Length: 209
Image (cartoon, one colour):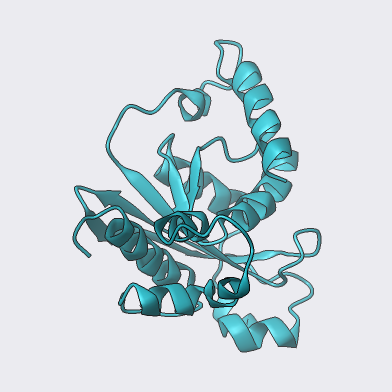
């Protein structure tokens, strides 16, 4: 999944990063030289990328070892035709909660404008990016162009876990937060998980929570 996405990102950059690309989005493909990152999380109907539909998006900016939560992005999306009861038990988003949600395309535009070309950080970020790429390509012609850091990979390197082993059982979102002594904010809400992810990242990079 990672290598395929890497190649698609490279192709997108060649196609859309040049002058003949869409002017509105050209900046997304420019190299990033700043000092900010964006923690990202999405809530979906399924962990199967092919079946997953996005219900909500949350994102916060990380700058100077601080989480800019007051300026975070929190978007609910119009409920899909199929909203499995099993997924509602996890994210607690009922059809009525999504009644005022945005159309998917509008939500994605807001996400792209918020993130810009900043690098992303997320828990199991390849899943989020795969789902976003799936729905973005038919609408915009490209997927999320940003570089990304995965919290699981960062945590494994922190503990020098080079191979799959029994400790893999303790790499869940809640498990990592507990081991890092990070308070969990609004679990299974997109913005809450994005904020918690940002605090995990800052902690592991040696900054303040």
